[in-house]
Length: 324
Image (cartoon, rainbow, N blue to C red):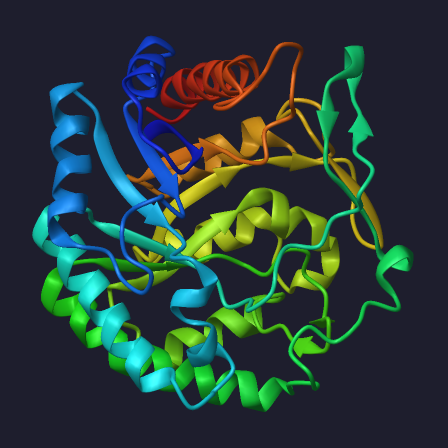
């Protein structure tokens, strides 16, 4: 089990030095800015790995291809087979380069948040969400898309990409829908409940290369409506070795309104989260997510990121003492 840093898309020498200095072992890049308007090239991915290794770090995951790489797949549109070919190439190139996890979501639009940010202690800023402010959100793709349409499209996708991932030894890590509401801009959302993950696992044939990128913050946003709480999710998927990565994020409360917080300030019991991960033998990476913006933060949000990494490192040391 390792502590990492993520949620940036350009790898600079400064970022590599910062990751090393704060004591992280790994890093994850989110929607990396790489050449190519439909797929990533092997040479570009291999260069990322080489630079990580030169800094004595590990690039453990690329989280999210750009939405326009696979929007027609998610919506079942005419160009989906062409996009599927590109996605298969992305997975093969990741495997060849030695990047073991591809994080992905099944949301063809964007993450809903209020325009105004929440003020945390000392004026630190974080995002917030109020369901009532989004009640009249317009359709994002011209018409409504039903649950079964989105399930059919997901099955079409995973049954064609997962075999490539298995051959390439790349694990496909599925992020829950954020926020976990039934539909967004007319598009049904599938991964807002434990049952959605269980159904997807059955579609994937319970493959060891299919699994969960558990965002503790997103799951906490839904509260009791999620079917299983965060700790039950960790135990269920961790026992099956299908828990691939963790977003270590806290929130103030549950839907219909919440705001994001420092990891030690929300309602979720984050020390218990870390201890439960240790108890199930999780051997992946935890990263801070949607990190609050602190004074003088820019780019990598270095102050907020350092705070989150230090907190996770302290909790992991304590969990190791408690669990053994």
